[in-house]
Image (cartoon, rainbow, N blue to C red):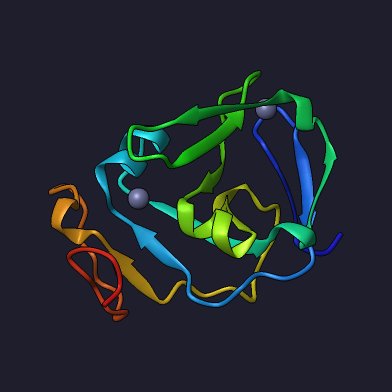
Length: 135
Ligand SMILES: [Zn+2]
Ligand SMILES: [Zn+2]
């Protein structure tokens, strides 16, 4: 199916109609901790174009002190969704790109929050790097 994805255990699965442009690899410390990885890559989608096929009840929310909300599968722990105040205003949400099953037509175009990039990763692709959010 088009633009389909799931968590690791498969209890939560979804499809999206369309992925919005501007996709960045985020090197902020919150993304690092939440994913247990060097950075996260989320894609933005309209809420009306996100269809949770199964397991929506398995999504657990974590609200950080800065008001952002991260959702993960309570069974397997997979990071799936990120929402900021901006997303709530725009009626969009962000989905972890790596949770999609196959997606080939999407190309991240920036690294953001590289001020906190881990030392053990060398970035050698030629997309722009921003110390904070995109300027
Ligand atoms: Zn799961
Ligand atoms: Zn981040």
